[in-house]
Length: 47
Image 1 (cartoon, one colour):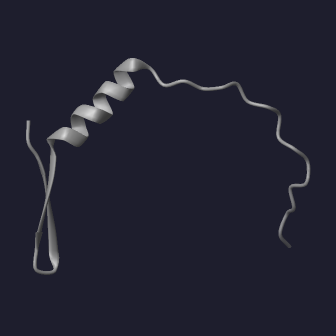
Image 2 (cartoon, rainbow, N blue to C red; image 1 turned 135 degrees about the vertical axis):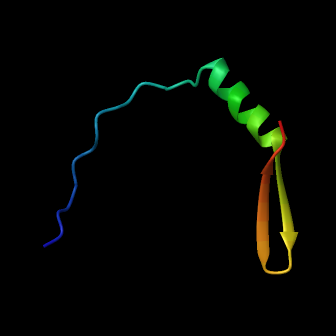
């Protein structure tokens, strides 16, 4: 039988990411290149 969760969860603190984490994700997304070729996708990390 499925367990129902009706109680509210305790309030969590407002979590903020570190500047290093944001920089890492932005740099990764800038270096990532996706090439579509017919029915296949190629992901290249250009660094």
